[in-house]
Picture 1 (cartoon, helix red, strand yellow):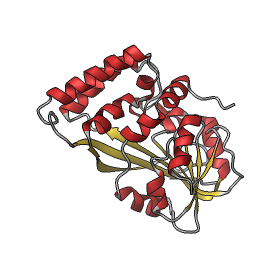
Picture 2 (spheres, rainbow, N blue to C red):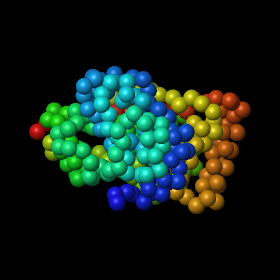
Picture 3 (cartoon, helix red, strand yellow):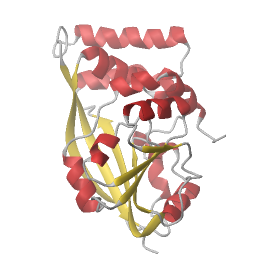
Length: 256
């Protein structure tokens, strides 16, 4: 049995299908980043750590590398396997990665590292990387300079409490890390285009601490999100909307 943060376990177990529908993919430019910064290509090995429902796998596949996905939440892993039967998917946790020493050319974690940003995790990543191998950390971050996106954040913020989040920056406290080079950062513009019910409503309902709420409270959140969708002049009465994101990517190298 893996130790998983309660909010992640409850929320992602209950909302795996909503996560798969509501979360954006990743911009095409990230493929060049994977190839250039992480050296991924045919013949290389890469571990997708905290793979979830496999949202990042489509971009990893474009590099031609041999992919192993590790995900501890059963419901998320089941969706991953159903959508990506060609990927080697393992039950495992960041603090106990079920692969051999020095077996990976790269480890990536998309939308997940904040859940397990600790020294034990970095020790495991160091163990499974080949000398000179790369670690890549990627997040899609809501573009809150857009007023209706900021309104969505105000709806969910009261429920956040101490749940690990990218935006708090606490994940950065494990860097600089022994055995790794300095983190480098790159940013990309991104959009998730689709029906409002998926790219906005399902996106908000897939947030871990919202998905973990009791039904009545989650319905309250959903009603507030629908009110934003129906009343904001930019997105009201639209069959398709573009949810704006910035994608932030960090990389470093195993140096010993």
